[in-house]
Length: 601
Image (cartoon, rainbow, N blue to C red; front, side, top):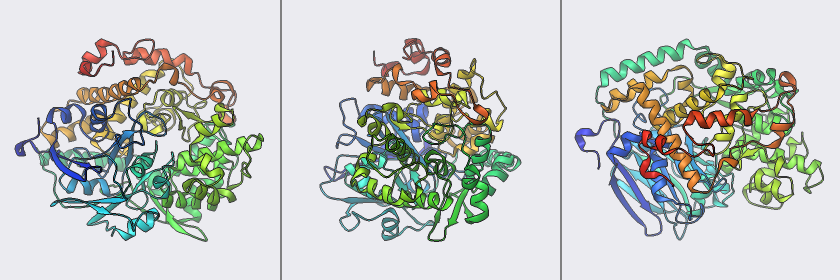
């Protein structure tokens, strides 16, 4: 049942379906009941993916789909309401995938008059989509195929205030299993290789140009909640000082000091060279200015310059991936690796982690390459070879799980469900390890990051090495993250703005009352739906694990002697979720969440 014009508050009420095989474009109504149950963004994408892509579908076949979904909050003017999600079946992991991005493009898609865009099929030749308020068109992209992200973005007329470009680079075209989808030049929907899916469809880019405005059920109430949220963001030293002054990289020294900064492919949990690649060093020596995504008061983005180049970033995860993970403390080499990944369209976390894995394989004499820990001088050539699938780079383009397995050492891939882990060592943050192991898209800090309670004391500090009772916190953070990704707003807002305020903002925007408890229940519904999707794909509780290194080899630094105690937390987590001993949602839980019809039994 679609949304009528009278009900068009927050949601636009329309989705656009593009079949590249048939060359057909068709607007369709947004299902009102599904929108209310799953909100938008990640939740809406997961629900649509369930119906469209089953276990018989190869992720790189024309039968897979790409769902670009905004949320009811997108383009509303609420803090960080610029974001969108891309849902698909991941070619890297085989799991359900949502990749999230900020910038300006998500806001612009909503302003063309659609809540979501669904792309299916495969074009016979390279194409791009152009979407305006007047309609959409499939256009020839032969002249763009082979161009980098920056070249494509410029060629299609990126204009932050009017026209916004989303595209893939050479990595996506060549279906590299680390390929990102880039928007506005330097913003990335990166994890899980959505760029490879876009490349498999011969879809080079999507251009959006529109000025449609979101309607409010109660705009005065909405703006008051927005005002209150602004006060919280200004009052927090994290969002008002740390992020603006040092960007996300302020975490480098902090995590290193507690012994939770993985180094040398997770062989250590402390890196002696952390100061050289820290946010403080980035600000002091390389920062040009701060910038922000649309409607963002935090402005954590860094415009930087090395002796050779200028660009955006890097974020903390990238500084870690090409820094500590690879044993590199040369800031310029790390920054320029980030610039190159953006231009090639490649996930920096997985790319850096895969290179770190290759360095260890090479040092052990298993992989014939010059890669060694500390060899940041090889980043440029290695990344180019990965994106264009040349030589050893073609093997690294598979990601660390397939690379390590090929050389008989699957244990050297620091990944969960084939997705590389980010920059938080579970030996020093026990909840983070449980989060990684149970992540629906694989190892991911953005699926309920325990950084807030375990390190920053937000909303309150809990013992980072605590094991018993930790599962309840992880579950709550996972469910809340599903909400934030479905609204869609930035996770940094939710670090300091309580769920209650998000519920009030959503209610005043849409006219649909979401009490705080019901909103959190909606997040739980989304998380369980994603779990069902993975179970349908053949994943089991055996996949809820961590690399043996983290379970058996103690950390270093201020987490010296610690290992991840995942087995002690997993059963408790399943019980907290209302799942059985095999990690399968019980019939009672599915009934409680309104998911009975989606049961895999």
